[in-house]
Image (cartoon, rainbow, N blue to C red; front, side, top):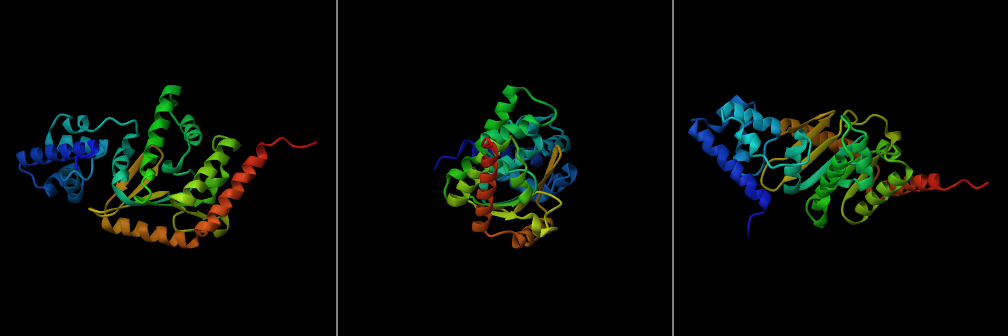
Length: 274
């Protein structure tokens, strides 16, 4: 079977890194120390399983004195630099577990919802750039076209449902989309306000499992994001997710709540009768 274009690029990137590392007389562990990366991360890159983030590529260039080769070798992508590695990892995952406390996860966003998110970002971007960002985000959802892999669980704080991003019509459409996905493709669980404090309330998180490498966690803040591959940190994140999931509504109860909130938005659009 022919390699996909993305896999071929990952393989080429890994071969280039391995060749230049060996030419410098460094082990993976030694290069990792110089570039402030884990040995396992270096190993995954060289094996073609992962691409580095732009920041990691810059550190590899500095450690190997390659004059920007590894940054230039990264594929062009209309993504925030800190998210590039995650976008490469998502299609390889066999399971993705998301928790979001304020926004619908990118994989589940509708066009109008995504446009509203990008339109409120800073610094402001042109209409053309906003449209490109939306297309890129919607393109990520193609991994859901496979009916089996990856398995996706979306754990949503009730605040995600209640914040009318893009207005009532856009929000109703977005929630109906989540219901449709929940009925046919993914699992959805809502953490209602009544739960109060829970194990994930401090941060959103994405957890990914793979067939051929260890699980990873990804956390994101304002203008920054970090892929976490420390086994202890990933395990702690998985346990926190499970604890929060235990406080959430069931899949069917969650879909019922999402439908009800979508109806509230739809009712709010209708003109009031005299």
